[in-house]
Image (cartoon, rainbow over all chains, first blue to last red; front, side):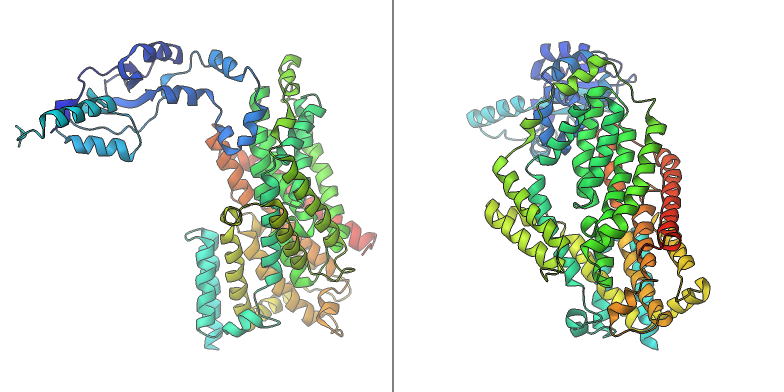
Length: 157
Length: 446
């Protein structure tokens, strides 16, 4: 089976010029709670999940010394939210996104997701995003296989 | 003769690889040591057991013991507690926080190694700077320099002093009597300089300072019982270091006793503690000792020391020019060079020179601790430790601090560091020169 057989062909996209505030609203509305970031030419440059949003609000030095967590101000998080209102998407997103092609095999996509511990992977054609594979799509595929058995032959082979 | 050239070749190649950082320094030192022993330049027997050429296990076990104690102590949160307490004590005034953090860094670093010290202070400083909405650069720069100053002040401050102490048979009190005043002298001018440099930039509104006062520093202590146990062990070993001649115990013995006592009473998991120690540093020293023993044994060091004698013309009665040349030479060399290999090479050089110039005494100690030679050793310690502040790569603490700063989102460029690092280092070396000159050649306080 190929990625195109299981992917969702309507991925949610956001532009590099968008901000934190816009992102929060978008992310809350879209399917799978993940958006792909595209530049002015429409090429994929990053991905944002809810985890990325939280990371953007937590100072990086905390990871050097966890003792500091207990010293942080009660309203640090809330203040940081307001300060970050206009933060550009490029400072929040995860860069160097992995991607698959529509013609890649399902196991290729599944293995990439498992090895890199990610829940979604974009499907690209000429660096444009054409679809998304989420864990939910894979789970749906597993259920199909258990019900109907392994498809006889791939039409493309 | 052939062994002379081989030993010199191994030394130069190891030296080159270590300072160019083409290969990990521990790999280089161990390979060099292996070759030296394989070719019997220094036999394995000599490298392990000989009075003159053996690996200095006093250094190895002192470092190991202190690593264990410091690792357990740093897990208690006591250092972070003290830093936050200090920030609250000055009511969150940034300039005073800078001054206190610089002082605390120097004090911590006088008994912790420099890298451990900045690993504790830098995150707290980034945190305070973030809360006060200030550029963390003044804090980080001052802490890098203070860590090297503190490390120069005592015998256990860092590997260069431990090496000098072991090879020259100096005591903890020798360092307190000779180097601590030097460091206090340099440090007081350094504090004045940073106040002048950064004082105006470090002003914040009262309501911002309130955020510092709102922190509960007591929450930072993770375990009071571990803290009490660690402090009691530290409270026993520091006096033991000070009075080690009276109680007839070498520093390594004290460190091993302290480390093992703390491991037992703290009930820490041994495997977890061992995993966190800097084994590469310990094995780097083991390798380095054998390589340096090789060049000493084949006579390379005596030849170099003859050159040095011809060049600096030391006088058995007055070694002022030798002290100052060693001070500046080691300072300049350590701006780019790993300072332990530098010091491990200069110590035998000075020792050899001492044997040439000074009247031979009843034992080794009477020569290497001859009163005219002592300022040379202190100059070597000051030059090697302080020279590393000039560049971002001059010492491990610099590399670690700048690395953390960049990861936290405040990159400090090479150029920006040099603009401050070079003048401050020159200032400190000039002050050290003044100290050596005043104390040993004008007041003559040996």
